[in-house]
Length: 111
Length: 110
Image 1: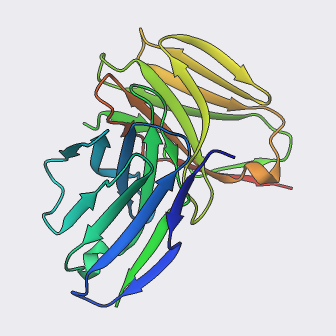
Image 2: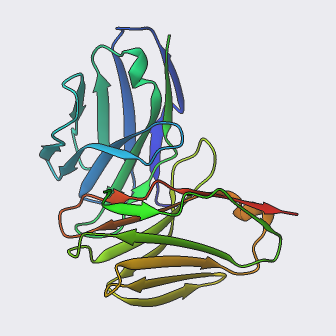
């Protein structure tokens, strides 16, 4: 089945220790997104790629970076995680101007 | 004022009842409207996708969009305990960015 896959599903990292979350898709969508979702809140868009074009949201902290080496994969790098970065991180994909499909999420814990 | 307002809930209904969920919005440029279902500790799952005004039905789910009133609804007929989840409305114009409601948590009691 075509889908959005995120790894790992659960990640524990230490304060200040870099962490990378990964997302892959078999939908062949050209747009990929990263969202942060905290408890009982709506997902918050961090950035998105339209093909290789990177689009950063104005309020996304510099601590968050992303890479998209090819159509299928996208990575979220958190350079120096703080306690406030503990959240669910969601990857989503879409075709241009169409509905977004989300992965299962990676729950990040910062100790 | 938030761009998208969603009835906060929580909502508790008996099995078999009709669940009614609503969102209002302020941006008249929105033309794509979605409803997502999110189970606890899972990613949002797309339930319904509509473009512009009108109704769309899929099984027990009906989505309505009224652009003149800037109001969208999702109805769940014959609700089941497995429908217990948080429901998020989302909408966009042409810039890829989704604007979400805050979500309504629904519990269907067996």
